[in-house]
Figure 1 (cartoon, helix red, strand yellow):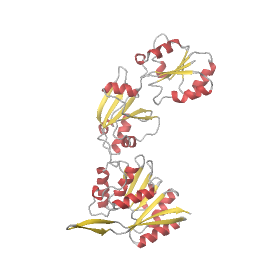
Figure 2 (cartoon, rainbow, N blue to C red):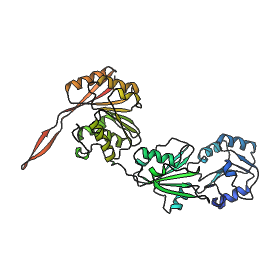
Figure 3 (tube, rainbow, N blue to C red):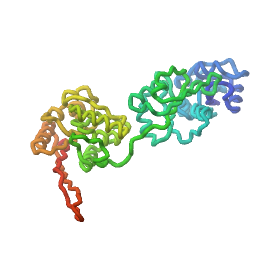
Figure 4 (cartoon, rainbow, N blue to C red):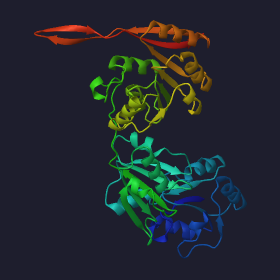
Length: 400
């Protein structure tokens, strides 16, 4: 029989009564060195400092009749190596039982006196983690980060600060459940400078979130100035044409006020948007709208396309709102990065429409052209008159 035991923080005091009985009755104990160093009294000296599933299985094959205990920190059901080992044990016909432990989530919850039932739980232990994306998709809930390896609460706080979330309230819990337990409270910006113990976790609260709604914010929701802006109806249609997905990498070339960039960023909370603009007054507006809508996954790229596009990551989709006469070069740059990128080009002038069709054709794509002719009412005494906006063409490509 093999028993998988969650040891909580790794101290005997937080071991469950079931876990204690199982440990003291085992004739072989396997686990990480740190856990083996803190076993309760009355346990066998037959101990193996192993944690990789392959090594554990090899050890168990050497002692097929052993009553073995396998140790895991925290709880066996919370980002634990137990989840990987259990199916392997069953595949080899080894019967196993699981005795859960006290997780770091429970320990932090108890330490700060708040329930954890509504927290979003995320692992940044030995895996890539985008803390800003996790917070932006948490729908206002606190976000708990299990950390470890190169990712510490401080590095996560630094990433949040870089993404514009430095004012979020943060709590770092170190050595929870041990005599060395320590809690640090502050903003993500402030706690980014903390030196954290190896056994640390992070809770992010009170994150300011962008508005979540269908594409097409009202025009007057944006800070505009004198820079031309893609209108509400056109923005909604463009996002539909681009078929934006939550994890997409997106370009907005000729971003203007950043209205399309903001819509793209909110539609792809786990992705990233690169707003390319060369006019200084437009760049200032993009920054302001980024802050107003809390579009923290939006980066402003100041410069002229296609020159500044070379250093950008490959896009999943590209909106082209202005190229200053370099339509072919911009399309070439986008499709060179990703031949399957979804493109949507907006045009007012017939010459721009012609250039867009030709640029797509050069890559073997058939252009689909949609004309949007939008009229809006304005009051005239007791009457309401329709006033037409300039017709807009949206051009997308489909490979033959």
